[in-house]
Image 1 (cartoon, rainbow, N blue to C red):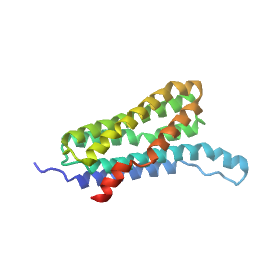
Image 2: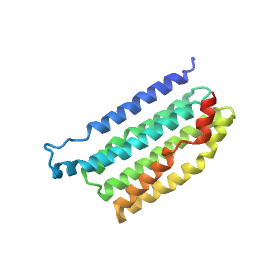
Image 3: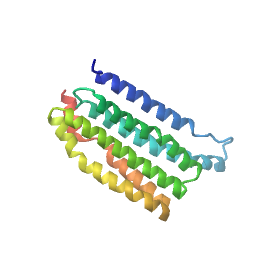
Image 4: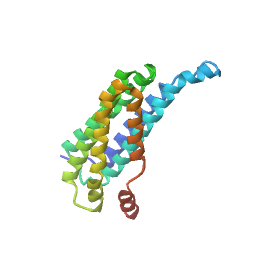
Length: 195
């Protein structure tokens, strides 16, 4: 049996992520006129899109870096990658639902649950790849990122019940976690720059 090339896995994942972003942007309905009220009506869609775009972009970048540690693609890696892509593909649904309900508590809680599922799926993929990867500076740098991943999970989980207190608290948590991950890991960047 022939082993799949990791470039093929990365290309497929990149394509799925590009489609996810495209679906999200197509959900934004433009106003019929230029009045302030019409423009205000689009703000929930734009806000949800921006938040979700940042999350998808972060996953895309970290996924790309993670695949640099991959030695070979086996069945476990394939299925763990598809598991991650499954949860990421539901982000446009959560994004549209939050926007269409004007950040209703249930929609925001479901969005938080989706983010928990995406984080868990990424952790599973990272763990499986970590078991097949040779120990290197890059794998050690990913180990250091686990603390940030755990903190993200705790914040996402707390956002679910907090959505019923005030959905905007949960949205602030989402934004905080996004900001935490937007700043690239200096060790990973340095190591990849040297390769």
